[in-house]
Image (tube, rainbow, N blue to C red):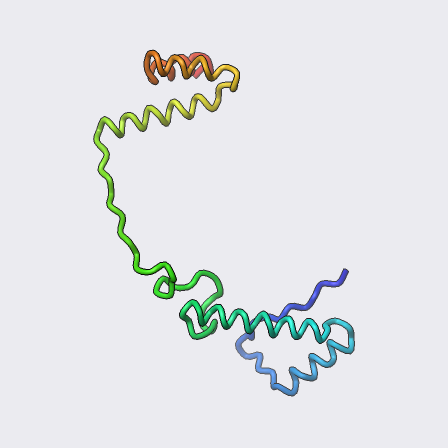
Length: 138
């Protein structure tokens, strides 16, 4: 299977005249490397890319790589600043214990997890952590 020829962006110093470009295309069509339908598809793709770029707020694709539009051209509107929630020392300690608990419970086979969940509910997560560490040999 032959790899289709895909047009690339113009490189600096590669100035091809319109007549040369047309001659190259005619040679490729004659050689069976490219079809008239391929050229029509490339034109349609370029037209759609230009239309998409104009909808994003840019004038064209020159001077920047395709991809995510600049922040100013975003359709999401102005950036909303989120309020940072302060965590108390007790809340932070609770999250640390929960992280240790979850890290260990994932290492326990599913058939045995209920036992440690029950310990965490009845006694405490710290007690469940100690039991899991001894069961895992840590």
